[in-house]
Image 1 (tube, helix red, strand yellow):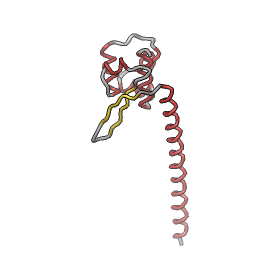
Image 2 (image 1 turned 90 degrees about the vertical axis):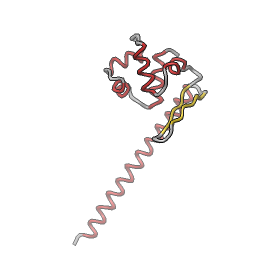
Image 3 (image 1 turned 60 degrees about the horizontal axis):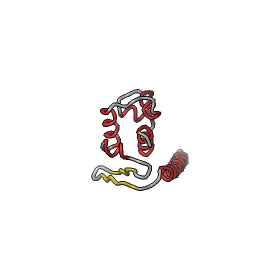
Image 4 (image 1 turned 120 degrees about the horizontal axis):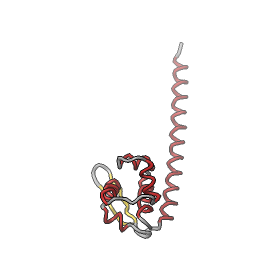
Length: 129
């Protein structure tokens, strides 16, 4: 896995678009896309900045391979960084499953909002003289 593939994979694991990543790096979306496509040589300082955005260090980013991934999660009180031995393909399948679940939850939320609106309208009509 080359550096540009590692960067793309880490970005996808975070669930960020190329535009979001470019914004975090304070660069143009086209410039960032060139990095992911391997069309530009990335300066050392930019690699450090990318690693910092991912919440890791440059050594971990560069040693990130086919069988090792960094798993980071946290909230306001704690942060955990682990190495998980899973293939990228397996992770992408898991990511897709979670994206589908999120889409279903969004649809359910929208449906429930519509029900609430209908109940409010019905209640208002019943209370009207």
